[in-house]
Structures are given as structure tokens and as C-alpha cells.
Amino acid sequence: LFRGAPILYSQIRKMDDIALDAAKKTAARTAVDQWVTEDTKILGIGSGSTVVYAVQRIAERVWKEGELTDLICVPSSYQAHHLILDYNLNLGDLDRNPNIDVAIDGADEVDRHMVLIKGGGGCLLQEKVVASCAKNFIVVADYTKNSIRLGEQWCRGVPIEVAPMAYVPIKLHIEALFGGEASLRMAKVKAGPIVTDNGNFLLDWKFIANREYDWDEVNKAITMIPGVLETGLFVNMAQKCYFGMADGNVKVQN
Ligand code: ABF
Image 1 (cartoon, protein in one colour):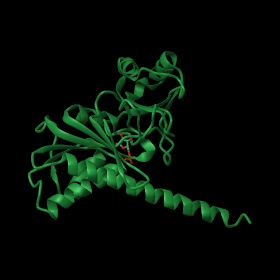
Image 2 (image 1 turned 45 degrees about the vertical axis):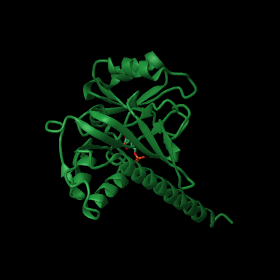
Image 3 (image 1 turned 90 degrees about the vertical axis):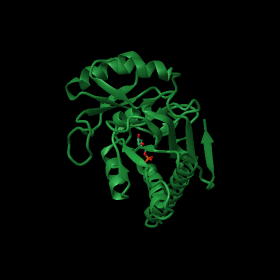
Image 4 (image 1 turned 60 degrees about the vertical axis):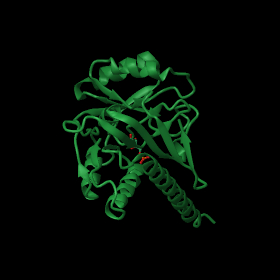
């Protein structure tokens, strides 16, 4: 009786993954086609699995459709840097291209006020810098990221990039200010802390899920703690969010 169960579970998982991938792809392609035009000169490229579909669509337009040939792509992570190179797109940087027309990035969770949690992949600092340089910051995600309030979805909490020598006082400071628990993100394979693209550590702050936080205030307060480089809370930054839905449609949120 029980021998069949693991097979069934893995089959269901596979179907879930296929549905999620399809949702990510639809969201990313729709956002690219609506926001990246011949007037877009500089494009910010985020990180994560949904952004891969956005870059694939851009490459398709450049290499198959002969469009966007002068488009310069500014990466927000090591992953994005290599994605741009892999698809043979023009690689830029903020030194030469500090004014970004559109930035496209993923998210871990988006609430009804367009407050985002980002940084599940560990790239939040550069992602926030690139997004802050963009006239239009567009988020692409699958339907599981769409929440009424933050904390509804499973996630590790709010990622916070910190100076390695300061992670313990920062952890204690955040817990004293806002409750919950902040823990150092550890690598799964090597038994040590994850080190970001910028050589820092990450704290994942599991806030109290059913408490009403003023995320703008929380973000500002955490950013003020000495040793904090950046938080994964993106408040008043995203202009539109494209969610790929389970039924194949795209939901656009402002
Ligand atoms: C980056 O990738 C992160 O800020 C966010 O944590 C993650 C989203 O990944 P995915 O698109 O794979 O869900 O954008």
C-alpha cells in the first residue's frame, strides 16, 4: 500500500514545478514585451529563476527578431552578469550606465501595497542598488509570491546583508526592536555561513507573521543599525508586478 506513495508524491511535485515554471515564463515574457521597447537603452537585470525567462525573451528579440541591438544590460548579481554573457547581450555597469530605463527582477513575496521581500537568492544589495537607479522597476514572479500581507507565504523571512564581524549584535538588535528571530544563513553543503557577492553574511529575520508592521519604518530602522549593508525589504520601489497565474493568465499589480 505504501510503496506507491513516494512515486505519487514526486509526480505531484513535478506537476507543481512545471506549473510554476510556466507561470514564471509567462510573467517574464509579458513584462519584457510591455516594458522593453526600442526606447529602452539601459536595462537592469535581476536574479533568480524568473529573470532567466526575461533574459531569454530579450535574447530572442535581439538574435531572432533583430530588435534591441543597442540595448545595454546592467547586472545586479554574479548570476545576472553571467546570464548576460551567456546570451551574448551587451554587458554594462553602473559606472558607465548609472541611469537605467527599466529594471526587471524577481521577488520572494509581494504584498498588496507592493512591498517586496527579496534576497532569497542572496543578491539583495546589488539588486536594490540597480532598482534604485531605474526609472521603472518591474517585478516578475509566479502566483505563489502574491500575498495580501508579508509572511503569508513560506519564506525564510527578511534577508539582511551584514558585515561578518557584526552579525551577532545586529541579530540581537533586530530581535529587540521588532521581535521574531534572525538567524545566520548557512551553506547547505559546506558547514559555514553563506558569503554574498560582496563578501558579507546574511541574516534571515523571521518576523512575527501575524503582527502588523510598518515596513517602511522597519526597513529604515534596520538599515540604521551599524554593520547593516542592506535589507531585503523593497518599499515604494516597484512600479508594477507581473504574476504568472496557475490558469496561464498574467495578473498585473500596481
Ligand atoms: C531574486 O531572486 C531575489 O531577490 C529573490 O530572492 C529571487 C526570486 O527568485 P525566483 O524568480 O527564482 O523565484 O530576484
